[in-house]
Every structure is written in structure tokens, then in C-alpha cells.
Image (cartoon, rainbow, N blue to C red):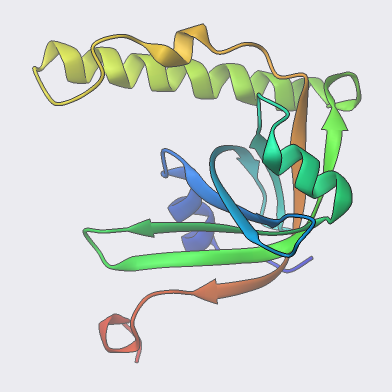
Amino acid sequence: MVHLSEEILYFFRKQGFTFVSTLDEDGTIHIACKDIVRITEDGQLFLLDLYMGKTYRNLKRNPALSITAADEHTFTGYCLKGKAKIVPREELAPEIINDWDQTITSRVTNRLLRNMRGEKGHHAHPEALLPKPKYMIMAEVEEVIDLTPKHLKKNV
């Protein structure tokens, strides 16, 4: 695993979701939106995956994945590449499950506040209807790619 800087940790923690890429049996890229439940400086992430769909099947076959996020306003972004495994709920530490609960609570609260201010958003609260996770994807980051254009970096 690689060390993740405070800047990278902050960037991913503030994302509403990330794009997770896996490979199917034919080597075709599959991309799905996933929420990061926890990310640590030692390069470990826990991703929420509720539906046991294509991402789940792909990772069972091939643990390679990339996790990508970008901020359209600052033109910054990162791609984290590594290996993943499926961790059943009963093997997850209680604090990871608690992080999931906190993530959902925060998202519902933010959506309520946006709705009260009349800002754009979903009229319902879909996060509140999500099932409890039966498993999570645990990823170990092996490589970090900074997607920020070189001419926009502060220390170039």
C-alpha cells in the first residue's frame, strides 16, 4: 500500500461518490459509482456496494480496480489504483459499520438542508431507503495518479 497525503484524504472524503473501475471476464472496463465509507493514510479504503452486481462479480474474478474522482470547479482529481477484496458484513469491524451509518446520516442531513434552502436536489431522500450493507469492498491502494493539469498545480 502507498501513503496517502492529507490533501488526497481530504479530497476523497469530501466527494459525494467516486467512479470505481473493474474488469469483466472479457477484459472490458466496467465503471460504477460507489461511496467511500472510510479512507486511511496507509492507503486502505472501504467502498459501499449494495447490489452484488457487476462490480461484485468482477472483483470476485479479478481484484484489480481503480477509484477516480474529480472536482470540476478546481480542475483537480485523483485516480487510485490497487487491489480489492469483498469483506462480508460479519467480518467488518464495528467502526466501519458505524462509518456507514454516519455517512448516510450526513448525506440525508445535507439533502434536507439543500431542500429547505430551495437548492437543486432530489425531492425524496433515497439514502434513507438504502439497505444495510451485506459486505463492503476493501481496497488497498498501490498507485496514486494526480489528474490535475500540470499548469494548474500550485507548486509547479
